Length: 280
Ligand code: KIV
Image (cartoon, rainbow, N blue to C red; front, side, top):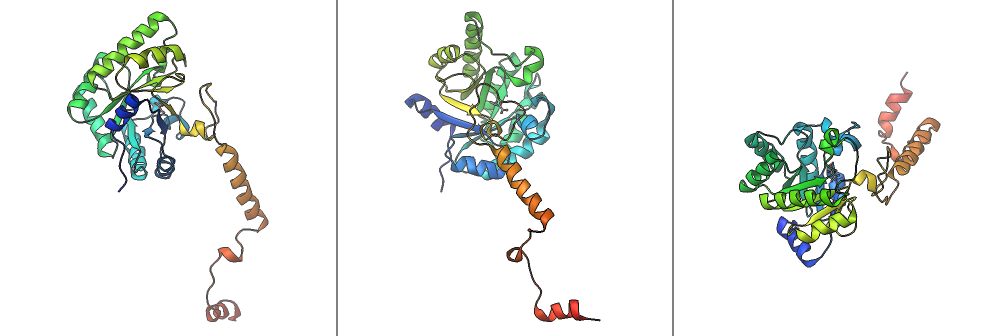
C-alpha cells in the first residue's frame, strides 16, 4: 500500500528544511509518471487553459473543465498530494458557493485546492474551506487570474513597500488556515524574507532559491509548450522535437507503405483466405 503524502508531510518537510517539489499535470498518464518520478505535490493548474486547451489566459476555463482534469490526475496519482486550482470566478463574494466549488474538486479526488489572492472574500473562503475539512494552498505575488487588474506579466514585490504588503497578505492567508503558499514571480530577496517569517511552507515559481519548494508547469519543463519560455523555467526535455520526430516517422512510413509490416497485422486462416481470394 503506497502511503500518500499529506499536508502534515509537507509541513514536516518545511520544518526539517527538505525542499518540496511540485509540478503541474493535467491527465492520468502524466500524473502516473510524475508520481513515479518522486514529485511531492501535483498541481492541476488552471494553466491547463493555456498549455492544453490553447486559450490566451487562465481566465478562460471554469469548474466543469477543472473537474474533468482533476479526476484524470487523481486517477493516476498514487503517492503525490494533488492540489486542484480553483478557476477564475469560482471563488468570490458568495462564500458558501465558493466552498461548494472547492468541495467539487475534492470530490474529484484532490486532497487540496489552490486559490489566488488575499482579498476579504478569499480569506473568508480559506477559513470556511479549512473549517469544512478542505486544505487550501494560497497563491500570491503574480496571480494570473488578476492579469487584467495587474496589467501584465509583471514581477511583484520589487520594492520594500511592495514586499511588506506581500508579507502582510502572506500572514493573512496563513492566519486564515492555508497549509502552503505559492509565490509567483517575486524577487529572490523578497521571497526569502517572507519564507523566513512564515510558519507554513512557500512554494516558489520564479521566486528564487530560498522558498521551501519549487513549482513549474510540466509542459514548460518538458519542452512541450513552446509558445514562450519564461526566464524562471528550466527545460529538462524537448518533447516538441520528440513528438514531431515521432509523428514524422509515422507519417513517412504510412506514405511509403512501410507501415504496417508483417509483424503488425492479423491474418485469417488458409481456408478463409482461399474463400476470399480464389472464389470466382
Ligand atoms: O496554474 C498553474 O499552473 C499555476 C502555477 C503557475 C503555480 O498556478
